[in-house]
Image (cartoon, rainbow, N blue to C red; front, side, top):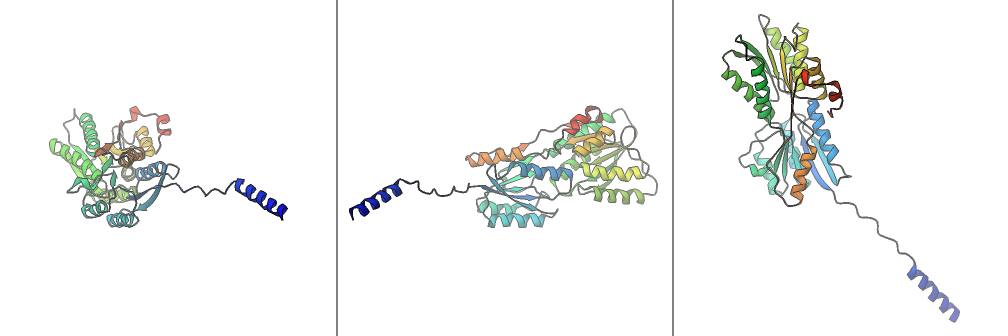
Length: 326
């Protein structure tokens, strides 16, 4: 009995000294972000989505809920309400158009979820409904394009005929770029808008609209400037013009475009686009700065603008284009 008692005592001692199984590592707490993207209508938009996805990864401590609105505001509003139900930490909204957001953004604020506007702006009665806007200054972009046109035609008294391809009507990019052109046309007696066509920022829709308009004219229009509100619109309009015998670039139709995507810059280097105004979609890091500021209890600036440049055939090289991220 003593030996048994001693053996039991030894076994108990060994058991107490044995390493205890450790509980499994706790899952990291991820910051959940709901993203309501406009769609994938252009090279810019695809790059914009990729920039957000590349920054807000699970490895970096985030979980993304991504909703593609397919160019419909109703889909974006539904996505925001879905994010509110899911109790996300932040909402990133790329607004399709500038108006119609007050109610749903109020719902997000009531739920305690900060909304960050990305790329485009929204007009709301109370700007505290969104935490910050990260994107481009579209009016500045338009003004830079107009300044270049004014310099290009400063010594010419002859009429300057402009064909204008607009982006998604009601979007902040369309409104500001259009406003800059319309103001300039009003200020120059010899500048004339031949037509304003709805291209919706897409190559296919622009091509169809440009073909219809060109073919409906009783005489071949004399076009000096093609003002396109993004690269995809420029691609469609250039195709329509070239199929009808127009020369784009150089002494032909001077094409002004916005975005400066890799393909847009290739057209510019080739000379088909005379001026390409940069609109930088790679704003993911700037958006993360805003979220980090909010996480630390700070109050971010209301607007964060990307630094953007102008490109002409003379300022470009193929090596620069090859290094372009988008």
